[in-house]
Length: 133
Image (cartoon, rainbow, N blue to C red):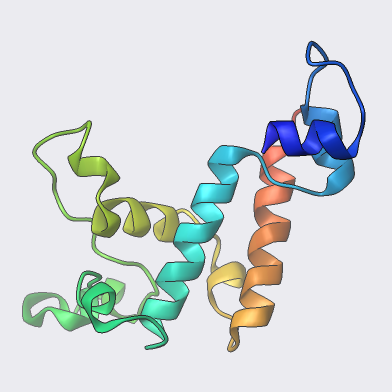
């Protein structure tokens, strides 16, 4: 991704790529992966993803003991416990639930995928480039 940005905006390989990413309005790698995970979670919650992915995510309202709690009405997901912090935390149900639960409410609530993706990219872009510019 950095090489592609340098190809579009000619710069030395020793120059920082962050200003180039900002000009192109591209997300950094970490935010890009979180963006892709959040879009996949949105598709799962709205039944637009394959069933094997939909079955991996669980809301508090889906579990019988948690249906009467206030968390059942929220849009949060249950983060499964993992034994191995190196491999287990990278599993789709764990990583996707953590990314989703860290998003603000106004980002996770739109009715269509297009509006969600737009708000999500704006959110990640502001988080990603807040400290530089």
